[in-house]
Image (tube, rainbow, N blue to C red; front, side):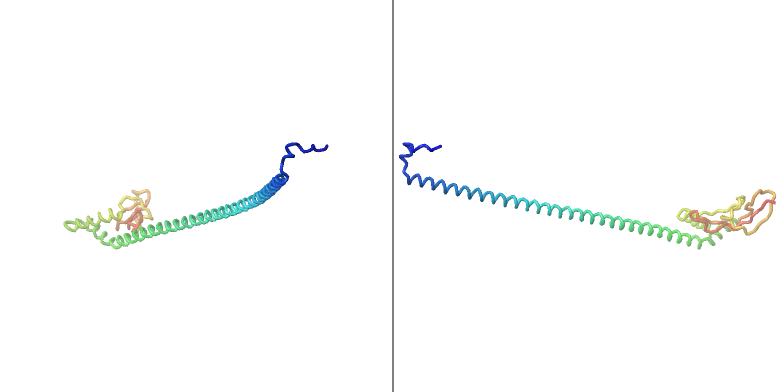
Length: 209
């Protein structure tokens, strides 16, 4: 197919002007191509930078997660150490209180044991009717203080069934009036301190005949 010949409009265009226009179009096309190429290069670089930033972000996230895990482990260890320390302290306090109570009880028992001879004299005087006047008042106050403050209790009475854990038999007789070993006479009363026997009652026992 052959191209049509020059039109009347084409015949009126200055050849130099036409050449200048074509040259300008070529220069514009070259600039566009360069810009497109540069844009493509920058796009590829941007994608590479984005990929690099994403990888860096993942690394930072992994580091943060590792640090968080380490912090949680350290916190758990610290809590365990604190719990153990609290248990040791509570054990120390408990042992201290028990030790103090034990020393207090031992001290009270020592005081009472030291006063037992005095209490024996008071009871002997009471049995013989010699506990009168100021001496009676003072003796009564002493017995009250020991009973209320130290839970001291005197025990042992005629007619009680003999109990070797509470009574010490110093004398023994036989009697047809009893069906089991029975206290016939109290030679020295016994004393309990807070349920603990400080001294057994010293008695005469009547056994069945």
